[in-house]
Image 1 (cartoon, rainbow, N blue to C red):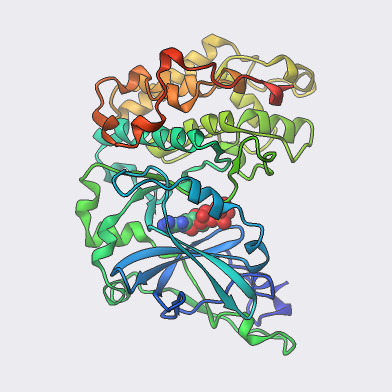
Image 2: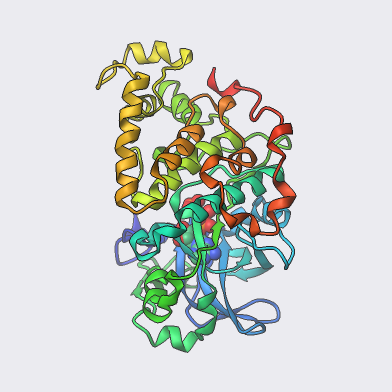
Length: 423
Ligand SMILES: Nc1ncnc2c1ncn2[C@@H]1O[C@H](COP(=O)(O)OP(=O)(O)OP(=O)(O)O)[C@@H](O)[C@H]1O
């Protein structure tokens, strides 16, 4: 496919050549300055999403580093992310648990007009070696993740794409490094020259080279190792698939299957329904799996085949009525799920958590099991989870924003009242 556009073939891990076209991605060069008036100088690439590229840039006005999420041109007008991020703004006095929008502007390229979201740069936790951090922070980090989700839910939003790549850790240490500091280190941009082969293509639609993703974590570990020794400050990222509950129906679930909730996996796998609805209760399930991955560096579930439903049932020890018919034609590979079997599996997890140095492994297992209930209506809300005994004695409620969304659990209404997704 790339031969239509480029002399070189598409390379895994980079944008596809077909994405640089009218209506597509914004061609970016290292060192160019975006903003009106010009303000953000591009340092390196941080990542790419389904419809965007994300860049580390120097804010020449505030002398700090920022992340620029540059949205594909034909997605700019219907992107809901800006509205959602504006709803999630906290005051300067509050420690956010959700990525904060610092600025927004539009940038015009030969491919169209792109919305640019300016955010704080964070260290994504999927690149984080858990062992590099002090396990003593586990309980606090887990509490902060749930705080972040409670905050999002309290603002009426469901996230819908929780996986380890969308959880990050604040990295204010990055601000002390200028572009030259960063360029002169081993993290200098890794670029791959590209040449388009068709003379019909507008050469300005393409960047002169593609950039590899910068390893921000490696840079910080080398240049600011104290980063791992202070308490973590978690950020939930990527509100690109979020929606305001009640204002619209849920968009298609894009969460990787091994983090997706059972109500979505069942409908996708058993009923071939790719538009399975999901809501805030679905985030609770996905966050439990993110917590597991944060500690163990890999997911709890390994399969993306039909066995995923079986794995879910084995860990939960139950078979929902709605699933029985489907399961009959796909018998259980490891025997029928039973509560004793689930207890055994979680005991094994407890041992793994203990090896990882987690505080109170049985307490953490109890928390995860509360979150991983097959019926979404029976999952506790994030606000209620903040009062789980696992957090007893934790000082993490010091974040001033906590008070604004923490319900009194005594008076909390039932958590997720409908089980309409588990038909
Ligand atoms: N604030 C940030 N700081 C550092 N890296 C970031 C930041 N925001 C995004 N990234 C990086 O860019 C990647 C893509 O960003 P993001 O997930 O927001 O885009 P998306 O289009 O919604 O992606 P996805 O396809 O994963 O849903 C992330 O996986 C992450 O590696």
